[in-house]
Length: 233
Image 1 (cartoon, helix red, strand yellow):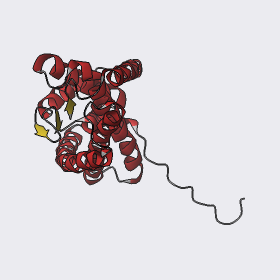
Image 2 (cartoon, rainbow, N blue to C red):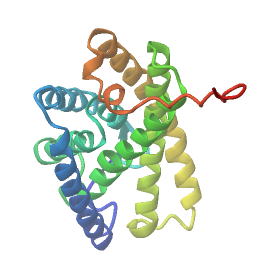
Image 3 (cartoon, rainbow, N blue to C red):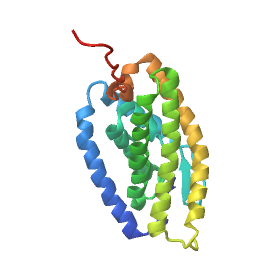
């Protein structure tokens, strides 16, 4: 899902670059509160793992746009939404500048879709699911799978919105067809990412549950109060 130069026009690309820069600034400020001796090295490991995973690309639309595993849900589960978004953004910047994977002029678009939108959607799903699912390996695995799958699909639709706003090729009004194509292909990609995310997070949780940010920071739902029976002495 890296967008190459020329796919989206300059004004839209510039707008999303400013949006991404502002959002990443917020992530830096909020992420500093979370960083400690445990989270800092974990963030480096997560970024390295995501970098390796994102090297698997799947051509899906044109020669200039490809889909791949994103890693937003994995980062959100292990290091939280703020640091997680920064990890994915750093990977995208390195890939664009060093490997030419995604245009430098389109970097704001790619960061918005994969680092910001993907991670944010994943963490919202994680926060909701961990309040209703048991905090067992099975519950954590389901949470990881569902959040990874849906975050990939939503991030893909972010590209559809951007193309609708400033795509350089006229689709003849068939933006719905583009949305369906991106959604369908990334649903398949999301299944693979969900399996990888679930396997990785459950493995880490079994060995070092204290390294899973979501388990530390998200409190389980409080049990419903039991009504008192009888009078009070």
